[in-house]
Length: 111
Image (cartoon, rainbow, N blue to C red):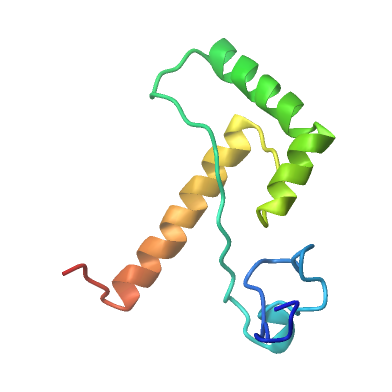
């Protein structure tokens, strides 16, 4: 893209990508609801004690706040957006519902 050999038409995130600030979002170009972005998280088994979840969450946020970690993520095209366990669980649930609905609506099947 930077060399000019490819032209980025849009990014599919809710906001413009920090690595490509000149590229508009799909929504900015009139494609409302065409939002998709990847995410990563740390998960554990159901029933994990709350104090363990809170400790892991706090330590993960501490590490992700380090400038050198943010730079590494940015170099891979990712933005660090730490969330607590409740917010992350809500995000995973919302994404599962969104994509499940699309799969049903479009009758997508795996061969």
